[in-house]
Amino acid sequence: MTAFTEIPILDLSQSHNPETKPQFLTSLRHALLEVGFLYIKNYGIPDSLTQEVIRQSRRLFDLPDEDKLRIEMKNSPHFLGYSRLANEITKDRIDWREQIDLATELPVPGKDEPRYRWLRGPNQWPSEQALPGFRDTFTEYIDRMSKVSMEFTSLVAESLSLEASAFDKYFDKDQQHKLKIVKYPDLGTLGEEATGQGVGPHKDSMLTSYLLQASDHKGLQVQNAEGGWIDCPPIPGTLVVAIGQGLEALTRGVCVSTTHQVISPPAGSGPRFSVPFFQGVSYDARFAEIDLPPHVLALKNRLRANKDDVEMTFKHSMFDHIGEATLLNRVKSHKDVAERWYPDLLVEVEKRKEVLRSRLTEPVQPVATN
Image (cartoon, rainbow, N blue to C red):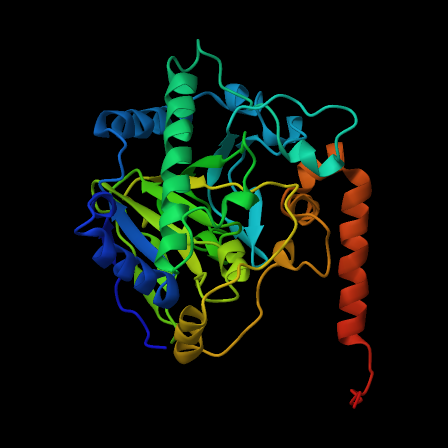
């Protein structure tokens, strides 16, 4: 597999024209198989809405701390709400960012529903008095981005010689999608303990995500096959699309999910803002790989060897439903929420860690089984 040196830019409007759609699908297939990241432009959201999203995002972090902490994530069993600076860890290191998690607005699940469905539910919104227009702006943006993500997923299917509806079984009719608004303070405003890790190296979960880079800072970097970090700078009028581990798993490794990170802005440059939108999947869905045409599988085999580094969410041997693994992942990532709402699951997660740690450190000689 050739190591990419830049992120491709695709014009989504070309997929609407029968004359340009075939070339668009070819370019999309290249991005899916060889990069795992791409920019899209002309994706159908008015620039006026985008600019209002950016304006409201910045205003959120200007609120007094008491207003932000009133909607702190630990108040929500749905893992929605505000997270303080340095509240999350990636690769055992602090992520120097603060953020709020929002989602498609849904009611609280019923008493008889499976526990993992509590991942779905209502948002915690800043008050209209504190941030006029904030809720309306992000409700509209989430709704429009939901349509963009579903259209894009159908194009992914077509680029792999599948029916446009191939992934539909993984979505609810009232599918909940998620969104973050993130502020990365510049290093000059942080203490000496700050490492420069805005968010550590990771791969996105689920199927696809769409990043609006809401300031002019560089900082997002994507890792190529040789381990090099390629800058993914802001380009006006675009979104950055990342392929998630779910799509990689469902396509048996044909679509590649790529490691990426964010570097904190340098001292004196001001904070970096971003608004990533994460396409959701049905928590009731059962894992099932997509049947791909032999010529598409052959493309993957020619590019890279088989590998299995997909997170547990999409390992069907471990869980019956995607929601079960997703809930455990959230418990691991947000211990403050878990301590309040899922203490028994947090104990279970910690037990699993200890068992795995003991198995990895015990003095046992490996013995072949065949």
